[in-house]
Image (cartoon, rainbow, N blue to C red; front, top):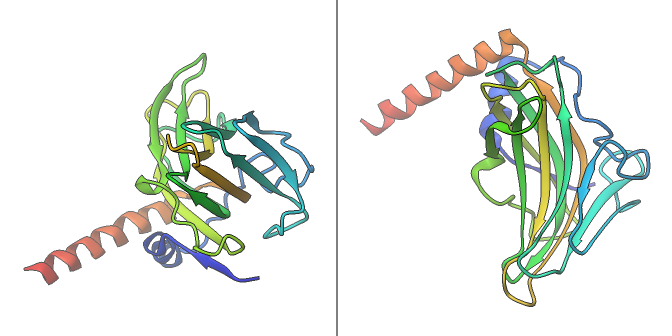
Length: 208
């Protein structure tokens, strides 16, 4: 299967740091129950789990949103309670593919949850819409590094979204699979930080 990889800088730093051996915190991240068990769903249009040419296993999720100016959301919510600590470095990866039209986009977000309600921090992973392959049949593996917020007493939430624009013909037809969320071990996180400083210093010298 042809698959593309993004977040090259993150992948390079992880290669330098060595593999993270922490457990995957995502619940049913590959949808291998055949349904949305472990996920919270907020549909606009239709949401389904099926054998949509998954990257691994037998199932993937499809968010088909053709309702203008709306968001179809699925959430792996409040995971990692007692495991994720404030400010810890997280590695978040998943596979996505699909097609959009007339302002449709796909997003992924991280929320640091406060026990009892509310969030201490939210972040759009990658800083904007997901850069899907132009061929809707080609999966892209997205990998992001993100810091947990100052209060994660309620764990963290990963939200995946298929969003439409205001145009009546706007469509966002997105497939997701293989969500993995891991805490980067402390030695690896130190390497990542140091490597990032080294790259930053090299870029400054190049610019001088």
